[in-house]
Image 1: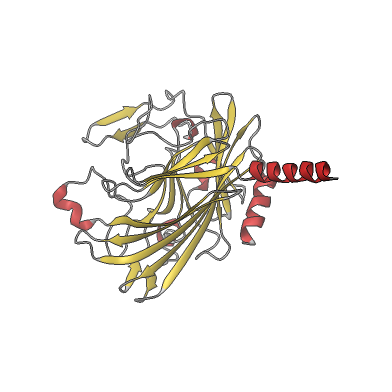
Image 2: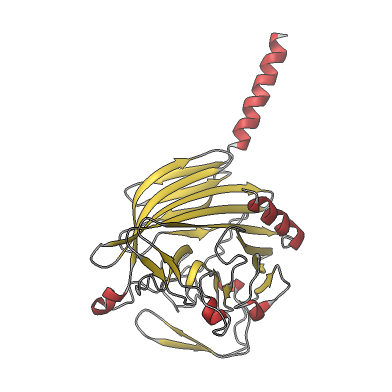
Length: 341
């Protein structure tokens, strides 16, 4: 009897060990937290003092394929060098009381920095490993004088199911002064995709690097890009831009794998379902606050918060890879489950 109980106990402990597959490793000196799934790096949360926002980078599939652009941190061969403020996965906005948080980067001249805002992470509240990895942090949205406009409390949950790696993000912004998010196109949750996930184009493309050098890529000559978008409303490709949908997926081949990244909106978010600021050149963003440009002026959203008021945004990001791309039905199931949280 004792041997049977011991065997059962061992099986229970083993199953618990296997379930606790998400591990967070904190490096306070480097201001980095690695997220490992099955002892392989999934992503890292980075909050260095010399970059104007916190972000997740790189982001790997189950087969260790990076779905994010390497430039400017770790350029890959053939990486486009436009928009140096596009790094990994981030959340910020182009106009908060007139300050531009979205476009700020090392490429902005010092004499113009006063027009740009910073998001400064000052406290890691929780790092927890287990079947789901948990990361909580606090940050301040500031101007160049370190005056705080917004306090940010963000909670990430990292998990895995089959070939999918999942990031659930909940961000609450608390106004420390009266704040207006002016209706603009550049926001809110953004991902800069790997070159392969760009949409191939016959149009010439101009890319400007951090030194102002312009490179022109002739239309039809890019043999790497093979991506496409599809939304929950059936829109595809460039037609997704400015439309509303509860989720949107970008997909394409990277090596032998069918790779996809899906952003799922949350039913209680402002302006659900969100507008998609999804560009063929590799910017994949959900922006619920950019109604004016997305509706050609028919409507607008200028979100106002009085001092002490708060607003919460939740998103689910699904990174999938394998022989076949994750199906719309599978995405809808993930979206339905997310909506119940």
